[in-house]
Image (cartoon, rainbow, N blue to C red; front, side, top):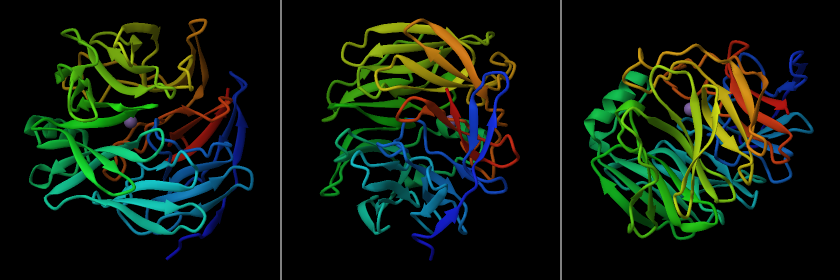
Amino acid sequence: MSLGKTTALAFQRTTDVNTGSVVTQLTPDSHICNRNYFYQKCFTNDGNKLLISADFDAHRNYHLLDLQTETATQLTEGKGDNVFGGFLTTQDDALIFVKNNLQLMRVDLKTQEHSVLYEVAKGWVGYGTWVPNTACTKVVGIEIKESDYMELDSWGKFAQFYHQKPRCRLISINLKTGQRTTVFEENIWLGHPLYRPNDDNTVAFCHEGPHDLIETRMWMIDENGDNMRKVYEQSEEESCTHEFFVPDGSKMMFVSYRPNTDKRQLCSVNASTLDFKVEIEMPACSHLMSNNDGTMVVGDGSGTPVDVADNTGHGIENDPNLYLIDLTDASIRPITEHNTSWKVLNGDRQINHPHPSFSPDNKSVLYSSDVNGTPAIYLATL
Ligand SMILES: [Mn+2]
């Protein structure tokens, strides 16, 4: 019972001699800490506070880190927090996250008062990262039939789950009433549900599974279930991943890659017309996230992707850098090395992924890494 408990942190600052970036380790070694998924809101609008996950108490829970006082306030307790999918509301008044794959919870940031916004129906399991619309009045999520569900605690199971063709449904939840509507339901593994920013009528989702087995990863659909369309027609050998909406809603960006090369393309479609564009050729970044209007992008250099069936054909050298990509002048430069191991830890496949994104002032990049032995959270100046 530790809601509201304050943990004092001692930030560790170093300067990268190669790039000049000041790198601040926000969370201590020997604790398991991570940032949320890269497109979920984690900073308050003023940039002073940051949502993190940490095991300062008995479990991995959410804490609100104060970047000025170097302290963290515990927001949740007990086991079962989905520590990647949680996000701060647009209004900065609450954390919203899924508990035990079952309950969508709201936590008041000031009082830590909990309320249940939505409960998953019997026979179903809440899966993955659930994403709000811009006004934070609704979220889209994925539910999987309980009889088809399994814990995905290894990349082997990730592949197996794809072949099982689990019953999945893409849902929208009204956060005021808790009412659920099903947008789309099928015996295909669905993931990455997204509301297009500033356009609630456009919802995106993906066909999940080993990237090189997926024919068409990215889809959009109207909120009422009409007008399902491919975001982009992939060529035979092409894999696409880690799609996100540019925060102003103008584009969807994603990574495209092919076997037998370490080259990657940052691509986009116009979110209204789906007009396709290769934004830039880039190093082997796994995850990318843009600034508000999509002119600047940060990405995490990586090695051979684990989420493909053909690891040999996709084998590449590890790239340990974080990159800043400036699309206004087509320049790419390293920010610093993240040096994460990418390892699965205690069945958690995502914990050692950097998942970089910009701070609200676009002057720093936030990321996770286990470079010092345990997963920790870092902020590097640009
Ligand atoms: Mn990841």
